[in-house]
Image (tube, rainbow, N blue to C red; front, side, top):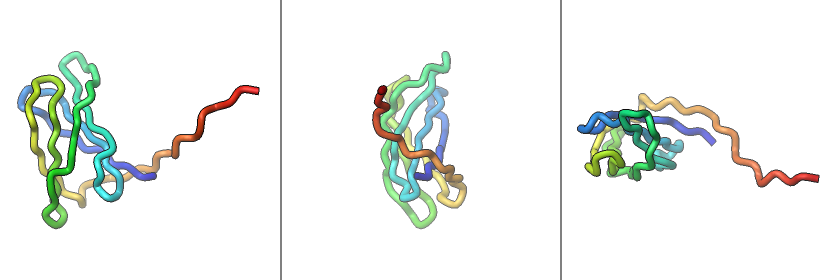
Length: 90
């Protein structure tokens, strides 16, 4: 599986991030507060306009809905190994 990571800043200065698959489906969203704690921040694709697409985060730090636009041509995808099944001990 290939994923791309995007990031931005909320108005409260928290760092927002999301992982996207090759179809621009959001796999996970997060925010990082001033103490660098990673918090779950729901993120969703809000629409596309050709190569441009929009993501919306619910910032876990301040509670704002934050809309940001990105260009699909700037996404850099990296291979991520598929998760294997549970390890069994002998």
